[in-house]
Length: 175
Image (tube, rainbow, N blue to C red; front, side, top):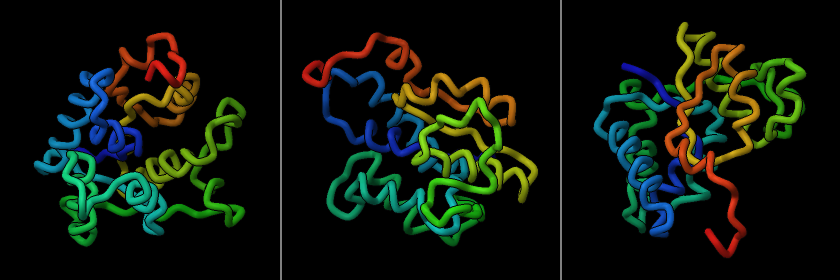
């Protein structure tokens, strides 16, 4: 079974009711449904930094969006290795954004500190299991400039909403 790491924006977009993002939302919902149907295993960190971010952006016990259902299922199956794998990552400064597993690479120096946990978990999973899970990403354009540098370290990113990321940015009112 393939393993994936789900960036939080996939979950948020899957719950989005904005019709302007309907195509992207539908693709995110489809991809999360594949995971819910046990076609892929989710990888998170053992300190639950990623899970905490998911919970801060969803309401798994009250709302019923696909993103909420995904998080609820993950919470219910944290101990099931067929559904969830946990990787140990080592915080370097105790701030939760710098990790021993994150590549020491000048091309990644400006990579968003809040997203470094996803890369660290991917590389920790490789260390512990021999394979690097794919990172699923919806619309975070900040990752685009780092895709090649991440690939140099074996990290692949599946841009679920690639077309949306390539469009010119709209102002906040246009979203």
